[in-house]
Image 1 (cartoon, rainbow, N blue to C red):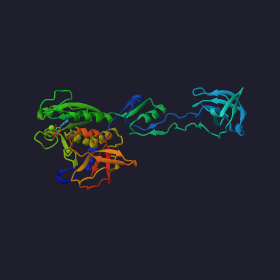
Image 2: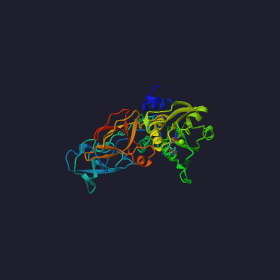
Image 3: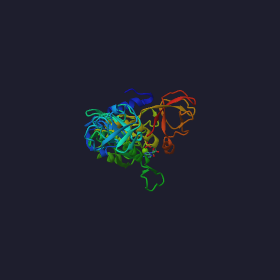
Length: 405
Ligand code: AMP
Ligand code: MG
């Protein structure tokens, strides 16, 4: 495996080897009513043609263009066509049918005169404006046709494509099963939100943030709680692991005396693919496989854990789902302040985007970039990506950014 300075793997290489270790999951069949955010396992082929016949796009009168060659003209109304109840007869010369939006076009008619361009007089309908053939007529299949592939496997269903699938008459759909992601926090100092926070204690905020990230991206988080920084506690926490698609550990991934993930889980059979990535935040990042389950060992600092999860866990979830991944999609923006030369690690600077008077995106990194700082991370819109050894940049120069959320 190509390694950058001092055993650190480049971000791209690390991402490639994570994705190599992840497989797409099986599918399940669910009701379309439950399908928001789920990923299609198969292409959806329409079961019907929409609209099924030519229909009116307006309320008005169905007429034959031959009858309205000179206007005004008075036509005889012989019936009506409404959505759900069409007119069965045929329009002959001098006749018209009252028609409503969504109703079938009667035989013999080939254009619609909107209600506003007509007037009732006795038994007749005065047509005051002409219309060309086909005006306000939606032909059969204008929207889509039976047998057309309208949604592709791998699509994450949003409100718009759920409406489309419903219109295709799909009550049940095959989606990829949700990845089950186990999350284990490690650290003697950690307590849960709501617990008594004594001396030397901090709250395990990461596990909640990561669980939310898993849910928001189509997975099921499974909270394994908090293990102590001792071999017995750690081994115990993972010993019963089964039925999950990935294990996330938080903390204990670095080189301190209490960083036990590599050594202790190594004894348990963790096969490590890499354990250091040339990035900031997030240098101590582990990927491997334990008991046949892929494992991502995230650093404990809250911003490091979240940024590494954004860049490695989210693509892994997308791969399990067979969905496209957007977590590495970049955009450009102009810098709101100068940046110094970068060192050997790829930097992900927490930053805020503002739109200037000219409508351009101006991105300004926070002055403090410490990987423990949740307050400015929560305010950030994006990360500015700086390549290893990138040159200094002046305010106004263009940088690459990756959006958060
Ligand atoms: P570690 O990677 O275990 O050395 O932890 C690095 C820093 O992150 C330490 O300050 C830990 O207290 C903190 N930390 C570790 N795990 C969590 C967690 N689950 N939530 C919030 N902070 C954490
Ligand atoms: Mg720790």
